[in-house]
Length: 192
Picture 1 (cartoon, rainbow, N blue to C red):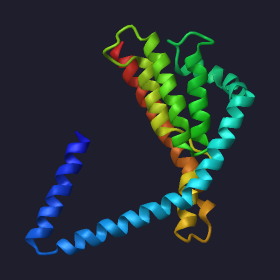
Picture 2 (picture 1 turned 135 degrees about the horizontal axis):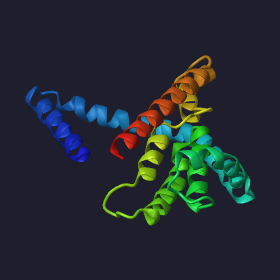
Picture 3 (picture 1 turned 90 degrees about the vertical axis):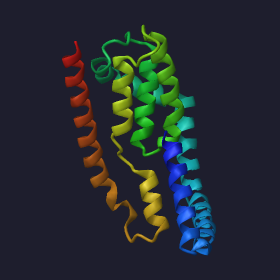
């Protein structure tokens, strides 16, 4: 549905540019925005690659597993339907940890694997389980300690202090996570 909406907006914009005889502007913007996107990618890629490499080392060395074990007390409270020691809890913890480093793209594989494991536990395969919904809320609103992508974008665009966003990002993501989990809790209680 979103693809359809974007497609319609693009078509409407192109048609409007032809009707107003500004089709040259569309071509200029396409070329300029493509060059900007490539430039942004080339400037951000090294940082993302570095962090993803560090996360891979942490995963292979067992560090993520050890941290996930530390999170198991909290996660068992958030996900009571997942049996203790289940692989899904470790994947969820890994996803949360990587998201805390501000690396959503590096957290995606953990999130996808966690959802697969949660689907295996799901009794009704056509609807999302409570654990799947809670994980989605937590993943979407996840606490970010180091907003790596935002810091690199701020540095790319000439910010004098790109890391000044850290405290604001931390507070806002804590509030978003708390509000999302609280809302999820009340909805679950209401539906029971």
